[in-house]
Image (cartoon, rainbow, N blue to C red):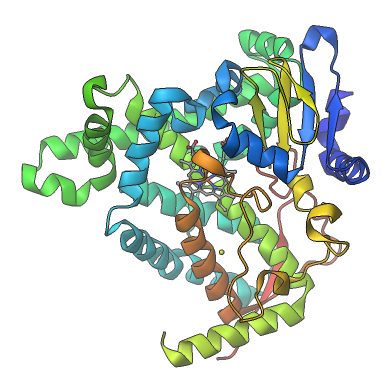
Length: 439
Ligand code: HEM
């Protein structure tokens, strides 16, 4: 049953969403006794608010989560309690440094000019089809590496170089989901024997660690050989990470072993496929709705003339009853089902599956904001995504650059379906043809 579920994940999502729509948004699933995997799947905004915000302290991620996402080690995504608080404050204060946003913007613009536009220009001239998803994965990999590690691997170049760490993330996000779908005992045995999905994961982990360790060794080497007053200017993030950890942790003292590596790997993982996948689905929808493409282009033009935005697991520490009336205990794995949430008639109305960007625009013409318990793409409560602003910067710059310069046409007959991965990438990529717009 599991391998079939895995290969037909998009059908599973559709069936699950239909069932949730019929059952009022939440249902409980009793797993096999040997798997110890009872599940409560919910799309109910009140339950989501309860778990993520109101009774946050009763829903730590726990050891099970940490074992599933072992690639991130002691990175923020795996932590609970006091250590999580320190990591959160540390990363927040780095991302909120006065010049951080402008440095990030500069990195993104630079990649647009040195990588994205030359590649699109060259491909559009030949009239060949391209996989836009791959372009976005390479783009976001280069920018996140540059910001975190002060190193641009230039994976988005005309010769499309093979960089093991860049490719490894696809195996990691697929493999993580596989671990979620099978009883833990199975993947643990596979890991012990280094076979199947676990062999692939282990190779992918090694590729990531090798890349990150090499970059960190270079930073360390260069910082030793540099005049102390220049260290901060060049290697801001890694150096500041340790300094900031010490200041945030008070008497906690020195960062744990592997602190820098785990943090960098976590931020690489958090920052790459999330943004590239968002861009891929955005362009898929835009290409299917040319009127929207035209409207966006018109807006960019006006703007320029004037010179002037998955799913998660939680366990309950103490048994309790959720707002939807469902009882949860320590053995209930709670799935906050984000895919289904975006398709719930109860939340968004009968037209919830139609592409209507205007639903996000208020009567006065501004952006209509929804509470994070309803629009949960960036999570909510104390664990809200820390890279939301970064990803919006990147999404806006890339989307407007491409729409301004090119008309996008989907390659007919190419199947666009979600892959079996933690971040819902497109299984076969997004094959398109580009036509240059004469400006
Ligand atoms: C469209 C892009 C993005 C989406 C949809 C997104 C979504 C999310 C979600 C759903 C979570 C909660 C995960 C969980 O609790 O298990 C999260 C957490 C997080 N995200 Fe993002 N993210 C995006 C981009 C980024 C970027 C670019 C970064 C920065 C490099 C980033 C950094 C983080 C961090 C550090 C956390 C952990 C917060 C915590 O546990 O306190 N994200 N993100």
